[in-house]
Amino acid sequence: MIVLTQKVGETIILDDRIEITVMDIQDNHAKIGIYAPEEVKVDREENYESLPDYYAPPYG
View 1 (tube, one colour):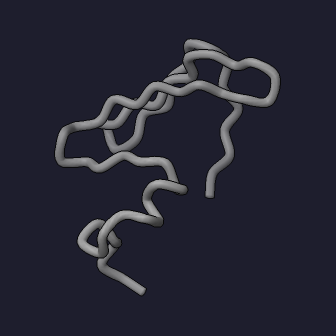
View 2 (tube, helix red, strand yellow):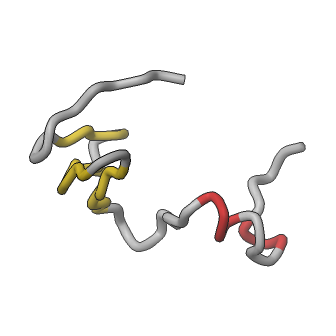
View 3 (cartoon, rainbow, N blue to C red):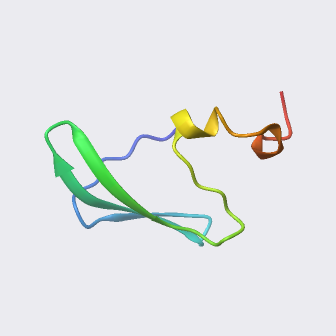
């Protein structure tokens, strides 16, 4: 795991095609924006755990 510290407006780029931007920070909450191609599924962990098995990674 890599831990990064970002300020509002700063962007992290993954694999030259996914952008994660810090949109706002208030109190103990960060609002982020994610740009990813349609074939990349993006979801919150608490939602991901309740999705059907076909969304599960092909391991473990």
